[in-house]
Each structure stands twice: as C-alpha cells, then as structure tokens.
Image 1 (spheres, one colour):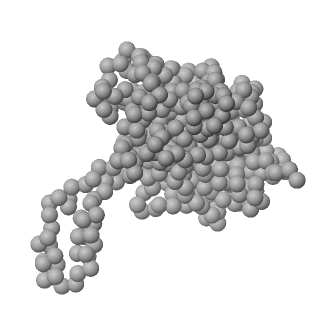
Image 2 (cartoon, rainbow, N blue to C red):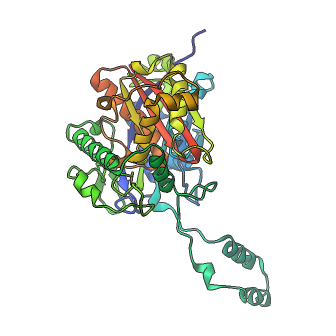
Image 3 (cartoon, rainbow, N blue to C red):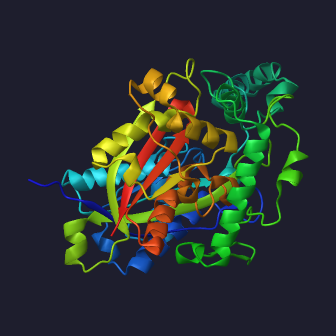
Length: 426
C-alpha cells in the first residue's frame, strides 16, 4: 500500500527584523499568532478542520513556554486545537513540519500547521542560581526576625544579571566561536566569507525588488502603530570592501565578523500541511510535497559543531529516492558564511565523504547558480525557531517560479545537529 503523501498547501512568514528594533515590544505570541492567522486566511480553510499545531522556539518566554498554545490564543483560531512547542535549536520549525508530516503519514491527523517564532528582543536576563535560591528561601520565611536574619546574607552580586548568551554547555564555546574554528578546519578564508555574504545580500535585495517575497511575507502592525512589511537587514549597498573593514567578532585572529554572520532576529513563520488525499477533497492547490526528512547528530568534541547537515544529506536523498544530480535548488541555512562554505567543502570532498560517510565519491558538486538564489539567513535574518519553515516556503515558491521539481533544504543547529529535507513542487 502506497504511503500517503504530505503536501504543503500554503504558508506565510512575518518580516524578519533585527532584534530590539521595530518588534521589540511585540511578544512572540503575537508574531506567531500573525503567522498562524494569515496562513489560514490565505488558504481559505475552515479553522475547525485544523487538528494540530506544532511550533518551534529556542528561547520561550518565561510566562508562556508552550508558545504554540499562546500563539494559537493570539491568532483567534479555535482553542480546541492541540498545540505542541518544539525546540531543536535552529531546526525547530523544520522539526515542527516533520512532526506534523509524521502524524499525517501515520494516519493520526489529516491537517496540521507547523511553524515557529523567535523574539530575541523578549529574552530576559537571568540571575545566578545562588541569587535565585536566596530570594526563593526569603519568600518562604514567616516572621520579621527570620527575614531580617536571612537578609543579612544578601550580597550586591545577587542583583547583577547574567547576560543571555548562546553558548554550548558541553564545549563552553559560543556558536560563533565554534563556527570560526570550523572555517579553519575547512580552510575557508575571510575573503571568501565576505564575498559569500555580499552575494547573499544582493540576491535577497533583488528578490525583494522583483516581488518574490511579497508572495508569502505578511505585514505586521506594531503596538506603536508602525506597519512592518519588509525584512530590515537586507543591505543592497554592502560590498566586500565595506565588510573587510569589520573586526573579527570572536577571536582576534578569527574570520567571522558581524558582516558575514546572520544577525539576531525577531520573526515568525507557519505552513499548512495536509494529506494529499484531503487536499484533493478540499480542492486545495498545494505548493509542494515533503519527499523526505533526515536528521543527524555529531560528537561536538570530535566534529565541527555545525557540520551535521553534511551527514544527513545522503540519507535524505536516499529516502526521497533521488540523486544529488536530480536536485534543482539547494536552500542552506546561513548561520555564518564560514559555516555554509565549510558545509559546501564537505559536500564536494571525496576524501571527506570517504572518511566520514564511508562513500566512494563526494556527495555532489554545488552549482552556485542553484544555491540560495533568493538570499539566505545572513541578509534575511535568523529567528531561531522560525528559520526552518521560512526555508521550506522559500524553496517551494522558487521551484514554482522556475517550473522546477526538487529542492534540498539544509539546516545546521546547535548541539551538533543537522536536518535535511527534500521537497518537491506540484
């Protein structure tokens, strides 16, 4: 018996904006609610038919950690829809899509929404465990004498917040530090990274100018009355000469800078998924099909933190029943230009494929004319929980525009994780 195919019917994303700017006072639930509401509105689907919502986020707000549920409440969709929040770091919304797809294939549901959101602006400073214990213990005390005695142990350091960071607990290194070390291992120069970043900005700018992103980016009204309808970090006027003037961000002799890395970003995305049979019954016109999903994890004490996708690509291709040569577009998450270029090095290396995958030949050759053709995370931004769905929508819309068939989606994530999808246009 043939397996039921899962189709992506529609989807939207908000503009992606630099953290602590125009979305600073817009909660993640609001951004997520916009993505959910507009996805349903564009699909012209009865909301009561939606059976599940999976939403990704990496840094959920303290007051509502099941952001999928909070976004649903904000969207106005029926409260009867179950909601699950997922954290697979930068691959969170891609994993949300995989989770909904798996439920559809298993016959548990016919229709679901996958997506994600991140509001770096909403991340709160933390206090030390010692300070937390002190104030919790203080709150339990009953008498003034007990409280005064306890207060004698109060120290000024308790009021010093710990700035939010993006460090790997296992290695103690930030993502940027790990990526910088990765560029050294794969011998990726600073000049290559700056050139890559400039090209990505130009492609994103051109895509906006020709109306590509208007097909699936929806405007958001902020609390102060502003209408945000475009990504805010795309720089049409950037150049290799300008980027060359920037200082290394993580090591004095490093090659990663603020100019060749993705910025901290606020934004949300969502996609409506359903079984192909149900889509046919509802007379929907899907964007495409999820052909395969594959994930990998690497030992980050032995392998570069962000090389995971290269390990997952062969399996994704095999599950989809296609070869590298069949792929019409490659959409790769650009956490850093150096990370993307290092992954390309691995994909194209026969020796790497032999040593790491036990293959007789390289995974394939990356045709740059088919690679991130509308720009990537460096110019567009990278709201951790929302990037995966952004790339799925971007790939399917571009396949349709080019009248092409297959796209491979590659997403690296913290913890040595990698996720790869093959999607097919309809």
